[in-house]
Image (tube, rainbow, N blue to C red; front, side, top):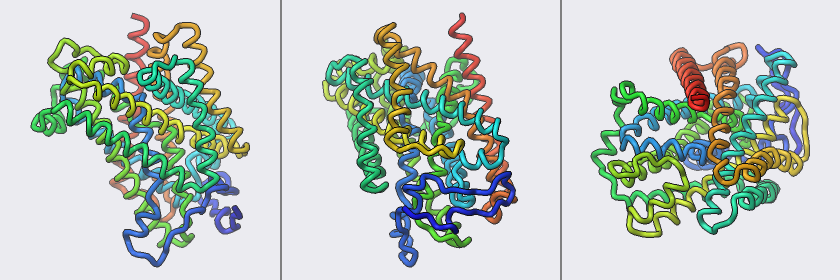
Length: 452
């Protein structure tokens, strides 16, 4: 696709380097916006990127924490899921604002602000984080295939490589096809958990009470530990890079009013999409609370164990099958967006462009090889520690994405008229510090548990 000089060159402003290229050039500005249409038609045209982002908030890496929280403490930790989702909505809105206002994705913004050495270090850390996140999705999909069809984990891990071909095929047809597949899988996950909630018959009053923050969470050390796990793993660093890039697939005009409108619609899109993630994460916890809490299975936390116990406790085999299908959809959905984020990060930080099929194969191999090696050495029991390690790596990388994002969107020299307002700056910096602090605490607890 031809990219005009006007699109490619942005004012240097407060950046160390001028913007010399667009994000994802093969997709940039590829989706037309009906500029004279009404609100709903424009909203539909902008809808899509938020749902690609939302899949990272309902990936298999979050399932074990939600299951443990519901099984042990009932509905109490629903409030933590609500709060963490609100934090995610704020940060993703800032990522969309950065991409549209500056013409840079977050990786490009880091490259144009920091020194070459710092940029390379940030790229390296980000690649490790994406591989770790991808590893969790690969394992989640493989566990689902094992539960549904008895497929050995090692073959399930290898089979997930097929998503490379799916993404390439759909992307060649147009980015709207990728978005349509992701939205379809989200709907299937939502339907699956709607069925699960119907079968488990949760207490509506207890659910409503659980959405209100409770001081008991702070007083109970075990409850606080799981709460921090939910909060700390909420914002996926690769989602911030991804969102700041894919909002630029829309062909909005380059004037101030058009960009302001694009930011507004992109914020609505991501906020609505993340509410679907709130429903699904909440549904996992509600299912665990209604099924396991108050029984002898309160200490259940493993995905496979939850699958095995759902059918006998709910009295129907449909419960376990639907649970595993939702896990499969969740894992596959997240791997689709993870490979795209890998391309954005490599091109943005290093200005290194590889053919899309080669970049995706490299990303997939980085995720598959550790999983295959661990399964070969330790068998199925090695997947649990590997999932924990992947979340620890994500925690380490998160501040390197969140703090630059908040910094860039708070500087008028970089953002011009689109700089965050005073109250948004204050809220964003508070959220960034809270998330970073909780991740450090969770990291400390994880290593402390390993060495006790």
